[in-house]
Image 1 (cartoon, rainbow, N blue to C red):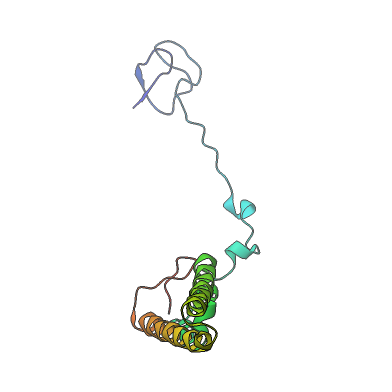
Image 2 (image 1 turned 180 degrees about the vertical axis):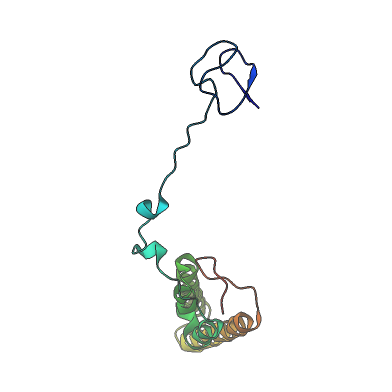
Length: 146
């Protein structure tokens, strides 16, 4: 049973005139507006293109081979981490060279640079192996790595 919008009496849903008060089209209807989403979304836009998932193996190999550049993070579309990884490595190397120059003179610079570079390379190998073994890693788009 529906209610008349004028007198609020119970009436049949198919009536055209309320039998109590005489109101024409007495039943309240909700006006629903629909939107055709196929007209508003363009499937050719880059954001709607198919996504090619990133590989854990590729990210791990990038960490092991050229990890100090942040290439693995750039590959994973995580540009902030990639840039911070690169800047961090450069700053650590510069700080070690400056400290070697201050403390030991010119003869200690090369040795300190090579030792620091070796330590950072071992760190990148460890991170590469961790990337390979972890299962819940995501790329910069929030997608799981394969």
